[in-house]
Amino acid sequence: MSIEVRPASVFEDVAAVLGPRRPDANVCWCLSYRIPSKENSELRGPERGERVAELMACGPIGVLAYDGDEVVGWAAVARRAETTFARSRTIPHVDELDVWSVWCIRVRPGHRRKGISHALLAGAVEYARAQGAPAIEGYPVDNRGEKVDTTMAYVGTRALFEKAGFARVAETTSVLDGFPRVVMRRALS
Image (cartoon, rainbow, N blue to C red; front, top):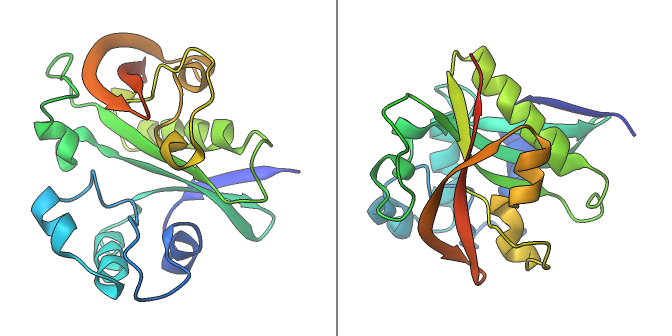
């Protein structure tokens, strides 16, 4: 298997990973940290996908992993200033550096446990670097090797980020699936 990671510029491919099975379903579409929480909670059903399409009209909103022609994974990546992390009360700012954030890594069922998360994180790093980011941060759980529920694993684990060259730079007051989240950073310049 040869995984290629590319900027997320094809809406249908993003929809294949993030979209619902039923058009009227209210799924995340990875909007939770990208748009204000009031707007996020007001969007329903197809409006959520339409909002993603609007965001994509301004450029890629993450990266996608492909196994041949099949899209198999997603990672959200953007300037922290363009996300709700810019105003978070639970995820601290380490300094005033204009860092980018990677906050959601998702691999489609049937493709898990094949190293795709690692490829997605590497692709997010390279995308941020290509956009001129001085550093990139993630906010994974510090699960100390314990199992993380699949539905909550989207933030990644500290070990995943460490393997990608990130270092822990701060604690947070955020907890997910019973595990504390940490701020992991990797310098890019």
